[in-house]
Amino acid sequence: MSDVTTLINPADETVLGTVPHSTVEQVDEAVARAAEAQRAWSALAPAERAAALRRFASAVEGAIEELAALEVANSGHPIGQARWEAGHVRDVLTYYAAAPERMIGKQIPVAGGIDVTFLEPIGVVGVIVPWNFPMTIASWAFAPALAAGNAVVLKPAEWTPLTALRLAELGREAGLPPGLFQVLPGRGDVVGERFVSHPGIGKIVFTGSTAVGKRVMAGCAENVKAVTLELGGKSANVVFADADLELAAATAPYAVFENAGQDCCARSRILVQRSALDRFLELLEPAVKGVRVGHPGDAATEMGPLVAKAHLDRVSAYVPDDAPVAFRGSAPDGPGFWFPPTVLLPTSRSHRTVTDEIFGPVVAVLPFEDEADAIALANAGDYGLSGSIWTRDLGRAFRVSRGIASGNLSVNSNSSVRYSTPFGGFKQSGLGRELGPDAAEAFTETKNVFLSIPDAPADLPPAQPAAVPPAQPTTPEPIGPEQGARP
Ligand code: NAD
Image (cartoon, rainbow, N blue to C red):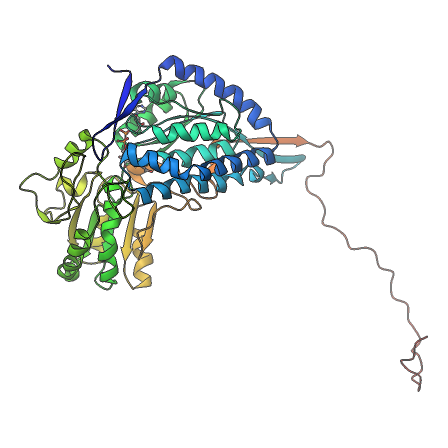
């Protein structure tokens, strides 16, 4: 078994270099360093930790072009998207830089004394990242975990380690204590499994496939270790006949083909009310053909290649020669792992292209009859991560939003991710939430401290108003011409 990954540029198949795999011994050494760094980090004043995270955010800001170029070469992400991703990491760090000074516990009324809670850091947090959004997904865990006073060891996916490695360097250059944030490239069944089994790691954040997530959760159970899981999806884009069909059709391709469909939030099922299906498909076809698929370094490119040859083979297997293809976009010829945007019209709701997470630029369009049927179809299957609802009827928008078992829905929009709002899945799409105002708390243990106060009353009496002397009868002053005159 090779102890390095050879990195291939997915757009032209040139070799970028090799990255050595970390060993179990190296993980153990890294966890020991992290534990030591964490003790010093959590002892810093909250304002100092906040300032360090702001400096880290500034360092990322200064390296946006560099990080974006790495993601273009390593992952095939279009340059415009890659710049957004690097900027998003800066924003996530900036947002959670406000958290150290806001890790606010509670004072709880009790008899016989005072009761307060503290949000204590967990210690060392292990973060396991997939290859589809290597730097943004990493930041969703490391930024709030560091903000809450923890150290982080992070394993990037084998195919895409470069931006995570550079982010760890930027953290050190910005003055984070050595050992506080370490990136350990390597195999899932070596580095990832050691994170899960290591007694010095108190929490795992795993983002990846549902199959591996179940295994990680079982390993965490073995060690009674906290775990957040961000897993797969097969999200629905639900289009009612009363919707702005032009807008729904013009935006639907980007809701599934962005990042070449390698997006856990991809709306890879488009459900259209039957009475609007023909018109919607007429509008969808030019929109799909208009997606600009090309070299990721070109600023006009909207969709790049798939990440690796093995993944191209997996996606291609879902579209054999007799697949029910309605229409397709284009893709470059020649070297690179290219696959054109593809729209399928399966005749069965149980076809594997309707139920499986393909994780490529393939979308299935299916008709539904009415609101109840739309909700039932959207809820079919084990996933519940994301989704969109298109309608002009506000009541329906809320009824359907409440009816779909999914963590992130948008109405008349396909947006899923904002660093300031919670993100995560229902059902087998995950466990726990990332991002939003509460994310740093997910990296703490709540400690309750009761302070006994001898002879403290069970309850304090209400404040008494100051005693007022009884009013004395007064003799009314005579009303005269000088009334109102005051000395
Ligand atoms: P994957 O499950 O194959 O790998 C994810 C990570 O887990 C990698 O770093 C891998 O090395 C590691 N790993 C593999 N085996 C392991 C083991 N036994 N123990 C510990 N770690 C192990 O997933 P992938 O193919 O890299 O990513 C694609 C999947 O990720 C898709 O299913 C996608 O939906 C999901 N994903 C989910 C979200 C979300 O937020 N819900 C976001 C992005 C991707």
